[in-house]
Amino acid sequence: AQKVTQAQTEISVVEKEDVTLDCVYETRDTTYYLFWYKQPPSGELVFLIRRNSFDEQNEISGRYSWNFQKSTSSFNFTITASQVVDSAVYFCALSLYTQGGSEKLVFGKGTKLTVNP
Amino acid sequence: EPEVTQTPSHQVTQMGQEVILRCVPISNHLYFYWYRQILGQKVEFLVSFYNNEISEKSEIFDDQFSVERPDGSNFTLKIRSTKLEDSAMYFCASIGLYGYTFGSGTRLTVV
Image 1: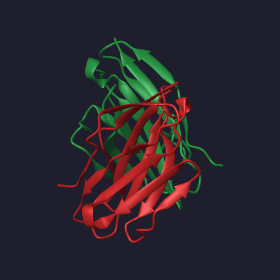
Image 2 (image 1 turned 60 degrees about the horizontal axis):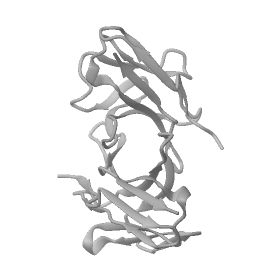
Image 3 (image 1 turned 135 degrees about the horizontal axis):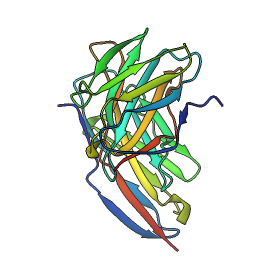
Image 4 (image 1 turned 30 degrees about the vertical axis):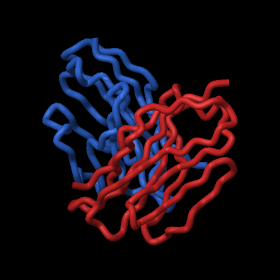
């Protein structure tokens, strides 16, 4: 099966704490992309990162960092010094190429992050 | 930065009515998609569209759903006879050089 598992349903932290959101994926493909999206209460999907399966370098963008480990099929997301504005649902997603040639995304169930002041 | 535009942002409809959700993908993108998110659940693939035809559809995308690109810019999702369980957020997306771009979604409420 090709799927994404986000085992943490909800996480609650206090502002300025660091928090890591876990993502484990399964795929038969050798070439794929992994994504993280943020969904604030307003409902839109905010793109955070896309990572190619051949690029295992960790990435840092401001307070955000991502750890991609192919050996454990994980693509974890860390927020450093969390802020109230980080409160949202975060989705990890895996791209799959379909028989029709299109690329569809398979999403995890999401992790709801609440950052308390 | 180019955007995928969806209208309306909210729609309330009575059960059994037809609804059309509209999207304007990014102009030089070639693949277009609809995804659905039932409240509190994960985002699910519905259908992909390329070269004016469906290239892939999920088991959710049954005969009550249809998609078309009527004029080369708009991309629509039609639900023929809405059911209560069609209440969800519907996202349009298109693919370009840097990957997926999602619209801001249409929240459909069936009453």
